[in-house]
Image 1 (cartoon, helix red, strand yellow):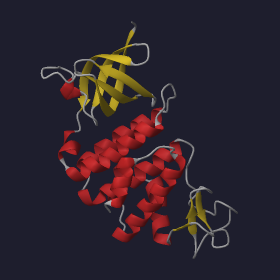
Image 2 (cartoon, one colour):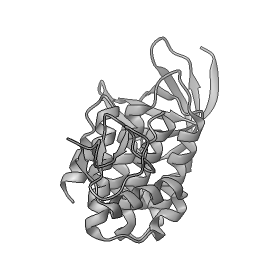
Image 3 (spheres, helix red, strand yellow):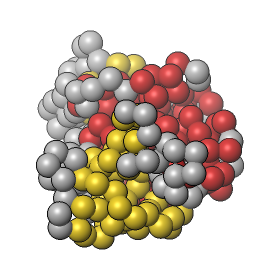
Length: 245
């Protein structure tokens, strides 16, 4: 079996048999790789502690028939502070779940991997009160990388200016003016301005963005609806996160 090295982020692990794990990994080129970690659940298994979600690894993989085989793994970044803190862990679970759903085997997006690493690095140290902004920013940027950048500057239907009475349409892909906005989601000017700021900012700058709790919650609600429309999978971590706010 040919072997090759790869840098990966552990997204999810699933039990296989009595001692093995199936790992969903985001590779450095942005594609998803699924691999078997044999013996990882044994009490003295050398791989078990290294393949936790949030961990960045340098791995050696053997090519298998349907799944790759994890032969070696060296920790690059463990991100233990995320797992150790409840607020960071639930937000991080949203990031990993979305990455797991939008990454595709055999189809790369290198920028997605780099953004994922930066997001986790910032999440590890950001003030707790800014974590919801990180979640919203990650969701918006991840969708934009997959061709679903929301239109926030002008009406997504007619291209005109938006003002009072605007709304947001997940179908149209952005804000709608008062004339085009029948049936859209409510979006006040402050929430729109916040979403625009999150799209423009680097992830490291997001914790410094100022917004009221009401505005943050509305921006997150609209962003969740937009993600749900464009990602054809159940996002349980995101649903739980939004419901808790």
